[in-house]
Every structure is written in structure tokens, then in C-alpha cells.
Image 1 (cartoon, rainbow, N blue to C red):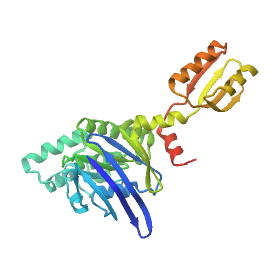
Image 2 (image 1 turned 120 degrees about the horizontal axis):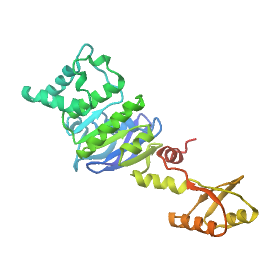
Image 3 (image 1 turned 180 degrees about the vertical axis):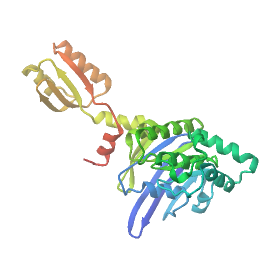
Image 4 (image 1 turned 120 degrees about the vertical axis):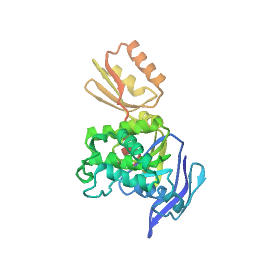
Length: 306
């Protein structure tokens, strides 16, 4: 549904995106992750037709597009991180204004507005002024506004930024509903824990490039192989220490009291074999596990964060 080939963008002599490649299938929710300044917002604005790249090819729905075509393409919905709202305008009036811009007729307007407001749980607020809504409600309102055109691609720049946990959960539930409708979604976010719940695929950017991308499960598997295995014994004696130290798949062994931490360079089956062998050799084991996988660790690991 979205394909980017060798995309480049510069501001003066500063390269923001360098030969960027990206492929998103229809119905996928793709999370774009990276430190500040790596070009996430720039990439989204280029896809929305708001910025012109230096070069590169962008296809939407299999068709190559120009910046002008993307800017006027109703198949593409764009939700910025920060956006203005009109003062002294009620929520229904705000939605009505945009529905008219999208070409809906009078008989259609109310139905399409109420449909989208119901999706984002704002039907009870239709008589309230837009400018007094909370940030979370404004985010949901902006999403409802984007959905008026029934886009096939949604570009969301930090949709959960600055929201409290309940508001982030609301956004997450709405996006899951949109996934069921096979809408293709690209999300830029720093809230990595939310992305692991919302997205089917993740791309991690660093230093103007995409350094790793793939299904969430595959990205977490990369982290799974690198994280330490922790074993807590009832007792650690010299024989047990020598056994662990000489084990071919164990590296960087550290023993503190009765707890051993190590890098285990083996599969899950080989991990199970290690546990079996330890028990057969008489080791008393209280705890045997790798740390739980999460996107936060893989993000820091890949982008060389602290």
C-alpha cells in the first residue's frame, strides 16, 4: 500500500533522510521509531505531500505519485502532532466544516459525522467548544476529522504524545478498530511500549537511515537473542561454576552469590537442554529465565543509546 524507494531529503547541506526504503502492506500498522532529529516527521510530511524530497520514488496503492498528487489525495489522511483549532466553534460545527470541504451533501453530513465521533467516543461532546477540550479529546477529534474522507492510508505523527495513560489506551483501542477495517496506518512515536501493542510492524531509524525493520515479533526476537539468561541456584559451588564456565553456548558469565547471569548463544531447545543437564547434575534451581522482551531495550541497543 505504501512503498518508498531511495528517498532523500536535505535541508541545505544537512541530510535528513538518506536513501530511505520502506514497504507497508495493506492493513498493516507500521510503527516508526527513532531519536529526535532522525527524520520521522519529515518522512511523514513527505508522504502527506507537504514536503518535496530531493529524489526518490513513492508509491501509494501501487501507483507512483508526485508531491502534488499526494497532497490532494483523499486516500491519505494526515494527523500532525500539534494542530490548531478554531475558537468559539462547537465540536459538531468543526466536523461539519470539514465534511463540507470533503464534498458531503447535507443529507449525508450528519450521518458521517456521528459515525466518526462515535468511533472516537466523542458523541457526548458535540455541543462543547473545541478549544476547551482536553489534549486527549483534541487528538481523538483530529483523528475523527481525518477519517471523514475515509482514507485508505493514515499518517499519524506522535498520536499519543503528551497523553495520560487512559487517553493513550483510548487511542490504542481506536487504532485496533481501524486495523479491522484494513486501513493502512503509519505511526511515529517515542512511546515504544504503546507501539508494541498497537503495531504489526516496526521500523527503527537512526542517523538518517532505517537500521532495522520487520514484524514486531521478529524485532523482539532480535532482542531476545541478545538479552541475558538469569539462573538463581540454591547453592553455587566450584564444580557448578566450572561447568557453567566451560559450557560452549555460555559467554560473559557473572556469578553473584547464588545468581548467575550470562549471554546464552543458543535456541530455546538448547536452553531447555541446559536446564535439563543442570538438574541431572544435581543443581538446585529456583529461577531460570531470560528477561522479558520489550521494544525499549532493542531501540536503545540498536541506536546505541544509554
